[in-house]
Length: 262
Image 1 (cartoon, rainbow, N blue to C red):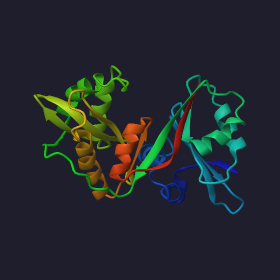
Image 2 (tube, rainbow, N blue to C red; image 1 turned 180 degrees about the horizontal axis):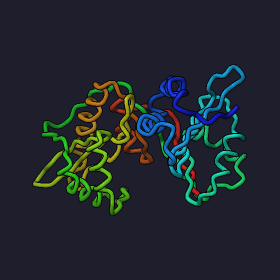
Image 3 (tube, rainbow, N blue to C red; image 1 turned 60 degrees about the vertical axis):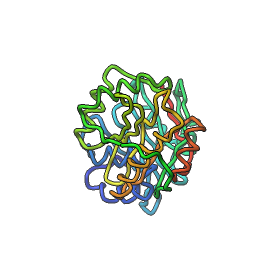
Image 4 (cartoon, rainbow, N blue to C red; image 1 turned 45 degrees about the vertical axis):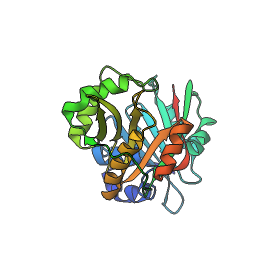
């Protein structure tokens, strides 16, 4: 049984999604930030006959995120998504859940991307080089964007710097970096921080400075601080070499994260 959720449902909803804080990073963050009354966000719950949650669907603008730890009413959730006729929809979530929707959708997504999804609840100490690690401020954002522009696998946008600066100012992002020879050469950043979890992004090292342990050093500094605050960590990756580094730090795979775009 599907119901659209309102403010009165917040406590029960958050108790359900906070059972898996890393898996529900985006749902927790969006509900904490925007609640239930904004026109760009809707939240639905799928309930069993006893009134217990089976699944949650959150729409943030054109983006739908689906979470269900077990059986759920995939057909009814697919109907909700099908009723949205906007051309640029995205359906995201753990692949085992999202893939159950696909056969029920009348209009199928045009593109699919699948990434490894990993979480960390405790950090494994690694030996890292004795190099100074600095915390970035808003003033460092242009240098950070310049570094990202030199990383082939990173996608950059014209407004990227504005978004990073805004997230730092709002307290939902932070960044640590290493500087060598007068330029920023390695970094690790968090984003989408909420009361229980944070996403790690932007882990990179400039060519010429790789294989020195710089990225691991930045990661350890960032992750230790977030874990100290009681936040679960999560990240996406598709590079097996990067996955090896993350697992040495204490990250474990929790499935694949799939993004289906129209």
